[in-house]
Structures are given as structure tokens and as C-alpha cells.
Image (cartoon, rainbow, N blue to C red):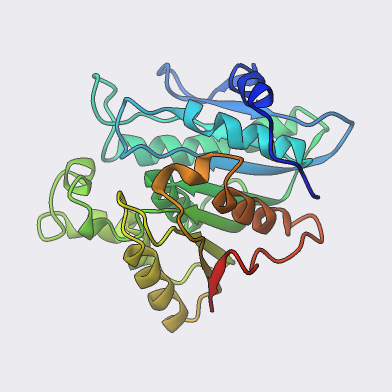
Length: 272
């Protein structure tokens, strides 16, 4: 479904939209926002996982604008929150991962009480640290929600090469190897579902090499992985619905329900 980029007024409206809030635990951060398009549905669902270095100063508000864009494109969005590092939130190992898993599973309970959500083929998408969480969550064998495909945007695909991961996981790969084995995306290839990696070659926050290395490792293990490198895309471009990077990701996400055109265009280099 072709959608025009939002206007400035539209972005402001989206930023202050009030979605449905659902708690999945007792902590104030154990909640998720549900955005639903107009119409009876049932609507396909995209689960969004925000990034921000797993730190407390970032929250699910980071994904509000792209959530609104997906709703304009006709799908519902489950935008999950979770405990992070700092501010006494108690995030890190294992709380952050327990929260993301619980938030995803809670979607099944919410959908069971409604008739406008279709969980037959959910898509999972995450940005930056949220990309790591999305790739890990897609590998869960006991998930209550069947994930059909996963999009990782400027993702931390190799936690052993991210210094902050030592704080998140409570040690280095040598000190706590079992934790890295459990959640580090590059150690869990291949996933049994299609994976999209979108990463700007000029990313100064998470090097594009991390996605390139993940793609190579996953393909070598027999995985279905597509890597696209939009030119001149900075790290935060993928949470801006006006950007080429987000357009590429959104069109790939919507392939699950529509005949959207391939995101491989002259302005977006695809690595195959």
C-alpha cells in the first residue's frame, strides 16, 4: 500500500496520539501500546521493539511515529516497553529479556479478547538494541505468538562487539558465555523465518559491518536473510517515517499481507 510521507502537522499529531495501553506485569514499564487501524479488521499485527542502548532514557515513545505510519498502511501495532539499564528500573540480565518475551506473549491474551487482530502471521521489528531483542525474540521456541518474519533496523547483531553489552549481560563473553549464547543474535543463526537487515553504510553508532557479518553467518548456516543498505542513512533514520530507510523496512514488513513492491530500488542497495 503506497503511503505519502507524513506532513509536519501529521508528525505532531502522531507524536501525541493516545493508543490503548496494556500491562503485562506489575512494574510500571511492563506495558505495551496497541495501535489499531480504522475498520473492522481483522488486521495483521507488527510488534515493535524500541532501541536506545538498552538504557532507561529511551522508551517506546521512540517508535511512535513509525507505529503511526504502519497504522496508516493498514496494520495494527503492538509497541512494547521493557525495563532498561539505569534509573533504578532493574533492567539488564535477565529482566530486559524476560520483559520482551512476556510482552510478546501478552499479545496473544489481548488478541483473544478482541475480534479485530489477526495473529496468523505476526511481523517483529526492532531498531538498534531493539533489533537485537527482535532477532533474539524471533528465535524463541516457546513463544505464544507465531512470528512470520523479523526486521532488524541498524541492529546490534553481535553483542560481543558492543561494549555496553557487558553491562547488559553482566560480564564479557568469556565471563558469562552462556548468556551470550542465549541472546546474542549472531550466535543463534539461522532463524527459521525470513530476516531483513536494513543498515546505513554511514551509521556512526552501530557499524554496518555488524549487519554484514550477521548476514554472512546466517546465510552460511542456511538462513533466509536480506540485507539492504540505504545510502546516507544515519542510525536514527529508521525511526523517521519520512526516511528512505524506513520506507524500505515498511514495504518489506507489509509483504506478509500485501503485494508491496520489492524494497530493492535504485536508491536502496540490496546485498544478496
